Amino acid sequence: MTDNPLPDVPRLRLLSEVARQGSLAGAARTIGISSSAVSQQISILEREAGVKLLDRSPRGVGLTGAGEILVEHARRILRLLEATRAEMDQLSGELAGRVRIGAIPSVARFVLLPVAESLASDAPDIELTVNVIEPAESIELLLGGALDVAIIDLYDNVPMAFPDYLHTTELLREPLVLVAPPTFDMPSKVRLADLKNEAWVMPDELGACGQAVRFACRSEGFEPNVRWHTADLLLLVESISRGRGVSVLPPLSIDRGVAPVSIHSLDRPHLGRRVLAVTRAADERRPIVRAVLDEIRQAAATQKAVIEAAATAGN
Image (tube, rainbow, N blue to C red; front, side):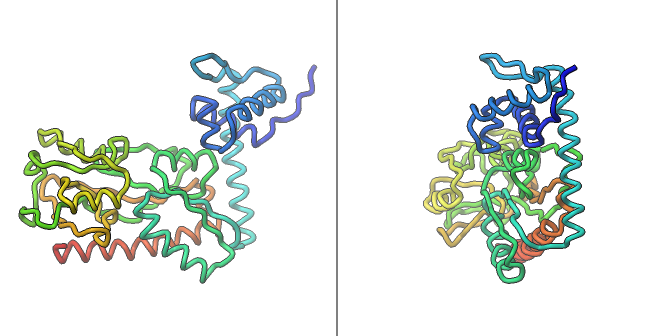
């Protein structure tokens, strides 16, 4: 009988990520190592386990039966280790170390910058690292252990499912508004259908905002005439200001300091987004993560008050 060593935990995490991504290259991108290094580590894990774990072919990789069993156990082990770390951190109560955050651009600017400044003063031993990325990538990195907090947005008509071992906290809700050139001649409240003959400036269709607005336009019976596609929010606002078209955006993403634009409430349909902070359930109990989440909630509440005040004033 062969006396195989117990599988190495980092390699179990790697196998779990290969299974999640469906490829060695996808796992490599998420974890930040080369595909050849992933392949080498999985080969070592196969020797440790004493069985073949992946079926490799020119079209990609798939789990063998043994691989599926090991991934199922690996995920349990990883969640147990995360829970253990959380309990040890709770016992120590230490507010020191690094908290890794993935965030959407508007929240990184208007929420996380104030949070970083506050923590630098009140808890200087906490180090924040912030990666500005799309929600889907944030969730992937969170699941893979490369992030501690993902700050994402969920738009009407663009749902996202979460595993039950992730914990979500709603930070704010905001209605989408029409953003137009300064001289745009429209009533203060606009129906989306009124914009069917306008030129549009839009975020990319792969992004949640672009998907949500396009879906809403199609539901109103028209395909938006998109003249400019851009993920750059500064360029988006300036191009609208210069008359390239109109757009429908969340207020937090609009910086009128870049260029003057007019903002109009949407009367029908009412479109909105929710901004969420997502953590692994075990990490949410860690004092250092809890402290950062508390700061994020406070900064988000300040921004929420600004949004509500602007809406009340008719801006």
